[in-house]
Length: 245
Ligand SMILES: [Fe+2]
Ligand SMILES: [Fe+2]
Image: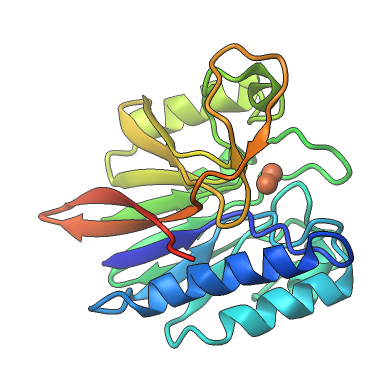
């Protein structure tokens, strides 16, 4: 299994629109340049910045250049119904969670919806996730990371403590989960939870300055990057690759 992960394109109209478009195009180019091509690509949330339909149209058209299946999930800047309209998946309607299960190179990819409408903080339906884990090898994806990265402004809007504890318990008894992959932080970071590796992907467009303990986060012009998750001998290795522009 080879899964490319792009995160947080934050497509926008008006100010900054050209930069957001160019960043996503560069991310798509970077994935297209990989040999072999990944089995699939995942965009881990905040596809749009204001959830305007035109933002989704631009993202959809940009991702259409990828020849492999492209999966997306919702971030706190997204709208569930807009995602459903522009990136149809089976099941759910009318404000219901945008979540599904798919197969990537023989690994089950469980795409969770960690959003709360109109709120930046995350939550997780751990019972739903548990019901999807009956497979020999699983990667779990969600927008909000279930761990602190040491930057309070971002940690305050991560997955809530209660859901994180429940997820830790579930992961502890689920050795088939080879990786949990997230977005939202606009930085790469890694830890373990319940004995499983948990990763959060850099943004394809905007990067948050690395400042442990800083009360606010600053957007900086660091090179954007994407991740490549590769199954090797029954484990998943995660690469982080800067995107050239
Ligand atoms: Fe974001
Ligand atoms: Fe986010």
